[in-house]
Every structure is written in structure tokens, then in C-alpha cells.
Image 1 (cartoon, one colour):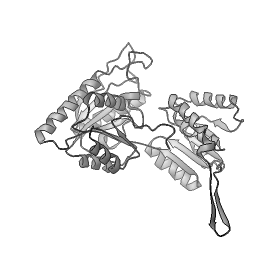
Image 2: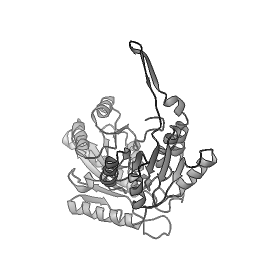
Image 3: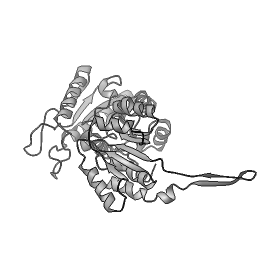
Image 4: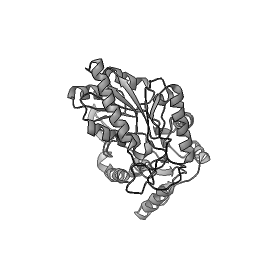
Length: 358
């Protein structure tokens, strides 16, 4: 909620943020102006996992720049966007500027094909983004802003602060039950500068601390103050993840913490709950290491050098975010400059930029 409100606050500064440009006498007797003008109507298609915040990545900026919007929230949790639209009108936004439409695939198709919608903002899976959003918008000539799937790598260097690293990893891998595009997915323990026996000892130290912390996460009803991790979206989501855990086992990864063994705070049905899972002996070619799982599952991997770890990141088809845990300025700078990923973090588990950064 706070992040969404911050977006609205930044959007109120559009008069100073989006000013045009003027260059006098660019040629003899010629001045050149650049104006920023609204495009028209934008469609905003939101995901289920952050129903309040994600549409506000786009909506207030579009309206502040003079556009109208049509928000299509997830069918799983549409209520917050309906309320936001009511508040927008109450605040003085003219009727017809901030609109909400509910529905499923047919509504999305209608938005993508409608000739009066000039652009689409989308957050969701890569499959839908690539096969539906980009394809349809390419056919109709609409502009697209899209954030799709992710497979985020977190690197742990030999000099990392153990307590801070493990705390950050628990938030990254298991916060929001792993149902966010910035969640950690693959933890790479890096042996830069270590002899083989030193690397093995370092690997075991990080692994044991990670598994211990993950096993102690309290799972249950999300509004219970004792609880650290709530349920998944629904039982369908749970069954998909149960299948992916088994797929990891079948691929040869070692399941050292099995989240299918449900332990809850309180007496709740197990329908939509999983506990944290941890895999070791994971190789980059495995499905669980390559594809977005979108749940509380961590893969622990090894790399002898920082260069090898960066290569692992680059060989993965996704590039949403990544982070490194180190106290070494040289390693931090090298990682920040060499890695080709959208959001890069140093000693932070969730690499989420603040609202006032583009």
C-alpha cells in the first residue's frame, strides 16, 4: 500500500518532471521545441499478487500526463482498484478518465483490439506477455509497457555478513510466499579466492544457516501476528508447485527441506499452504533452475568464481533483478557494472527501486 501511495505522490510532480525542451537558433532563424503530449487512452492489466500497488505503477502517471485509463485488475482480487477509482472521482478526477473493467480473457482481448486504446501496460507471466500482449499490440500498433517473468539470482561472496545475508534471503525467497516478480529464486554461493576445502566449508556454512532459517519460518493465516509466511493464492497454485517440487526431485536435485510437509500456526485447512522448500545440487540446465516457479522454493547453487556466477545469470533467459552480498567494494563494483540485469542490488534481497527513480 505504501509503495502505491508513493507512486501517486511522485506523479503529482509531473509539471516539473515532464517539462519540454527548447533550443534557440538550432539553425539560422530556426528554434526547436520538444513538447510532451498525452497519447490518449491506456489500458492497464494488473496481476493478482499486488492488486493495489502494481496498477499504480502506471495509472497516476498516465492520468497526470493527460491520458485516460482503463484498469483491468486480476479477477482474483479486483476490489482495491474499484475503490481507487471511486476515490479518484471523489478527489475531482472527471468521470470517464479513471475507469475500471472486470472480467477474464475476453476483456483483455477486447482491450488489445480496441482501436481507441493507444497503449497497454501489463504485468504478468512471460507466456501471456509474449504470446498475447506483444503479439496483439504488434498487430494493432499499440505501445506496450510490460514486466513479465523473472528468475532472480542472489550471490553470496566469501566475505558476506552472514546474519544480514540470511535475513535478507528469507525475506527475498519467502516473503509474500514467493509470489512476486522480485523474489529470490537461485542462491549462488561463490568461492572467489578460496581453496577447494575452504569453499566447501563456506558452502556448508551458508547452506546450513539458510536451511535452518527457512525451517523456522512460521506459516499460517497472514493476519496472525505470529505468522511470517501466509498462504498461496489458491489450491490450484499449490498443486502446481507440489508438481514442480517433484519435478526438481526427478531431475536429480536434492530436496533438503520439503515444503510439502505442512506445519502451520493455528488450525487451518492445508488447501493453499506450503512450507518453505530448499533444493541443493541444482544445475543451471534443470527446469527448476531455469524457469520461474513463483512460490516458496529456493535453489542453492555453487560457482567457483564471480565471473562464473555472472555467466550463470546471463545464460538464464530472464533478467529482472539480481543482488550480491559482499563487503568488498571491488566485487560489488564489478558485479554492478558487468551483470546485464534490469535491477541490481548490493547487500539487499528485494531490489525494488523507489517511486522517484524511473
